[in-house]
Image (cartoon, rainbow, N blue to C red; front, top):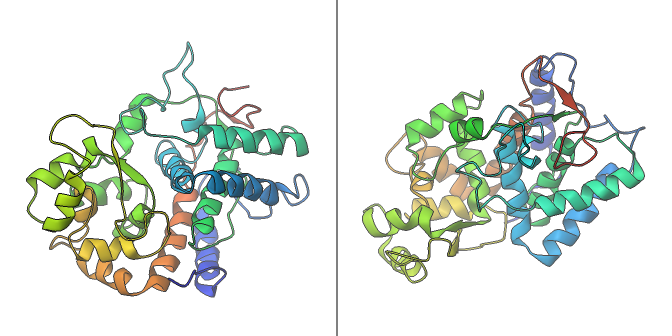
Length: 322
């Protein structure tokens, strides 16, 4: 696809979303220029770190994007997913949706080290993750956008909140719409954000039931995936979400859904005779529409902030509170 980079749709979307964010959290206003004087080289430092990480392993772009999703959906985009467990709280890293699958923490650590060397105690881990997710998308061929900044880092994390707020691979369309709706994300936002599965991998244990038991699946695609995902064993064997361009950020995910080649049950739910079928078809034939809607939805999701009264800070080490 032709990469949607600095097109007007992204920045029109930014203006709309920034207006919506203005009252999102008391005294926590987000702005792309938040660090323009306090850490002017921030964007280039994060970009360099992500460029290196993606050159080493292209999958890492998807892994960092997933960390950002999983951070924002649990008490807002507050860097809580980055916290290791402590004696006083059990964090999000070992929640069901993250245990043995969330990855890329060392990439954020490395970028944080570089940022701290340039701008001591200034930039939150939450903002670094937001920038890194954008860069991961763009480095894999996806859109670019201006990231509103000014988030603060949570001082605690909650495994139970992660288990309660993150959609699972067996989710129905109704469940997906409800979970995203709880975050003030529309069904259209949900369908656009699901397009993040145009990159990345899933473990056999999360799609085994689909490839062996479901009927709304292309037979040759099911057979292909059964080749590396046996009926028993091999739970952590990986398969790409996108059978066409596994590490390219494009609209092929939606083409796969139209062809009944969605890897997870929750993927195929977007195109299974329900309310999102027409939009999936639209995205499958219009990469520019998908990119524009994805950017708009990422900006909305990136504006999810901790509730007022939450204790926050700028963490010096992303893995532990100061």
